[in-house]
Length: 537
Ligand code: C2O
Ligand code: CU
Ligand code: CU
Image 1 (tube, rainbow, N blue to C red):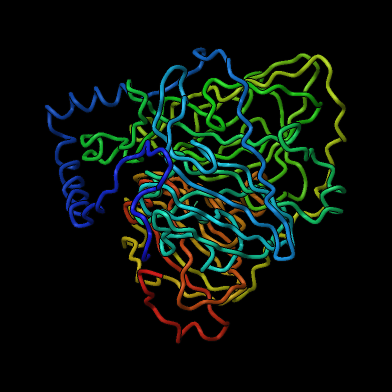
Image 2 (cartoon, rainbow, N blue to C red):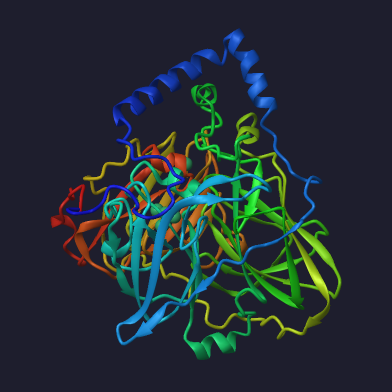
């Protein structure tokens, strides 16, 4: 970018100075050495002592330690400016400091603020334009997770925005109502940029008449509440822990998930509560953590209704008492309240599908209180929960001759390969429905996310998926040693030279190379499509 200042001019720079990229080669050597050493030292005596220390320190819980002292921050709803050319959202990313913990200043990054970003909201059929002004001290991107849009607008690793530059993507909303999000996606730096605080929610609505007919709570911040759940670990000086597992843990091949924080933030609020003012509340749960899996439920074990997966409404509400969400998954739930009652949203021990000792290292025995919900003495009466969410998108229809692809997630690779910016891993026909069989090796937990589209889970652990995994998704947890079959509905936007990403949403895995690229081409031209793309666009 010519003529662009190297630093975010005129803004506080609580971040770190510009730095030159890390050596990829060094990382690869470390990874290999780690594997070998890990295998060797697991049986070694001195190591076993150290391992016990690390291991015992790993079970984490805040249950009983919170006072729910702070009203949860509701991110500002940015509706943007509308004119003939559509709806324009102006976003500015910058570094700053935020008092996340009482009395401590934490260096953070944020969008239109110092930590996290506003909620964006747009309606089906609308044209959306974004002006993303990067005042951060380094290059970044902004990706629209779950959005169906052309690859050139997707904000993946090919769309770096230099410091001082403004990126202006635009597209038309052509998908059903859903709870999406945005976050940076720079090659090998996603965990870093997301941890510092760049993330926010993007709500899509159906056409107005449809929204009104559906009858779900929809008054943002009143009975329709965003809950962005993140875990962080804070150092004594207020800074956030960025590295995660120690070298020792990486060598053992365990705890390799990056930061599994001991402190929960909801919309950036520590120790939060929410005042409930209506009999039904819709909670848009978003797991914006780097790796942690939450198993949500309430401390009084009350039933709640799942109404939407991350890429859209379900056909009908599904009653549940527990709902597990892996990193980057979202869900909309509706909870009923009686006047004056209180309950706590808690994350119970998640089922990671992995055995001892890895499950414990990966948070499989952790429990966290997330937020207390306090119903007022007088509640306004909500419309009854509809029995059918009428405008749920129909299931993706799989033709008999659908192409079947196999993906094996192991270590931090997919099908034995590291991400390569110039390699196209999959060429697919526009609007084709494909079957993706995604297998996780036995040694770790992974979460697959595919850009630019929705998929249905058609087999989960060898069975028809449970009701709460049906519906339109864009991210799915793949339990260790299991295969998940997805019906993937390819985007309609054709571009043989510009790829979409698919990857593990454990951000450390993604950064280490657990990502591949797919292009979408005109049906019938797959065989002639280029298998390489330019690394820089
Ligand atoms: Cu949530 Cu490739 O991203
Ligand atoms: Cu995405
Ligand atoms: Cu992974």
